[in-house]
Length: 165
Image (tube, rainbow, N blue to C red; front, side, top):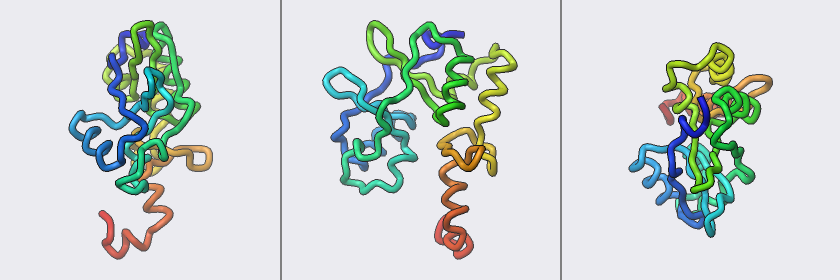
């Protein structure tokens, strides 16, 4: 499958000066986790809702953005997208189409019933080494861990004392 068949188009974009609290409400109300930041018709970065967790609620989300998001063409294959996601430890890629921007997420790939075995292996290899989720990942040594498991590993006392569930 190609990106043009997988992508959500147009991608739901937000302004980089949007306050964190507004962005979190917006993302929840739209059922999305990946927010491309658009300025003057150009995508200047990308944030995931997990990137916003430690950001002050009144701070602009541009403070948490990752510049230079991974961009693919509409004709790029699902395998190529899965390879990029694995290599860059990301859960979405932007698609630059002639008529605007689209987005392909790991969820979009997982919805496809006809993925070849190699593509499925790439997706499967990019899961949290502790809880096996494929969302909100960060590099952890030679593997991946989700933000929640990393927080538990870095602050076990908070979880033992019942501060966080």
